[in-house]
Image (tube, rainbow, N blue to C red; front, top):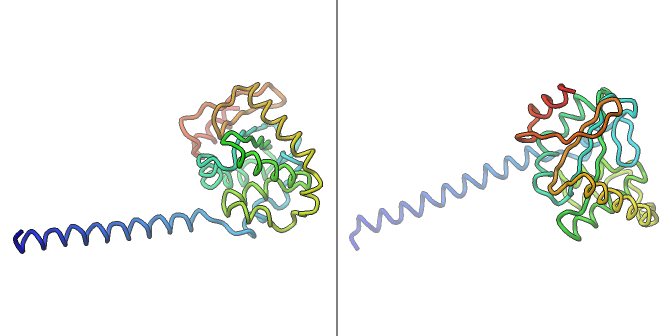
Length: 210
């Protein structure tokens, strides 16, 4: 092999290494941008009524119901990219309420995470738990400030009942993927939100039609 070919091979390897390093840096930067602190989670929910798996005013004209799996990558992306904006624009001001139906679509680990979230819901901390889970991971959710571990362990039966009800409702409404969103206005029957993507723009357009 000529010196020229050897130099070309070394150059290709060097370029590949540089590209890999740049891609890793971009990915790490994107993950940092998508991460929010415990204080930011608390702030985003401060002052918003919360009862078990319901967030927002019970008198809100628009009701939105989400079927989600805590280990679902698409659910995580939705909550990281869009959900906080929905809280600020619709749920916080009382325009809409949000019902979170956690199910174990992806297996036992998902069911266990959902059970813990429903147990947190008995303390009206389900949304703190779920946002911490999506943004910071399972350990952060389990140790989120304000969630009483003693109450978590004592409310398992009710959590199992709530999970069973959510999974039965998911079967009834033919939910086969997560996240799946449904919408209702002024107590009307639930209608599936058929969206090309779960971007904020698409969701706002669908909500405003109602």
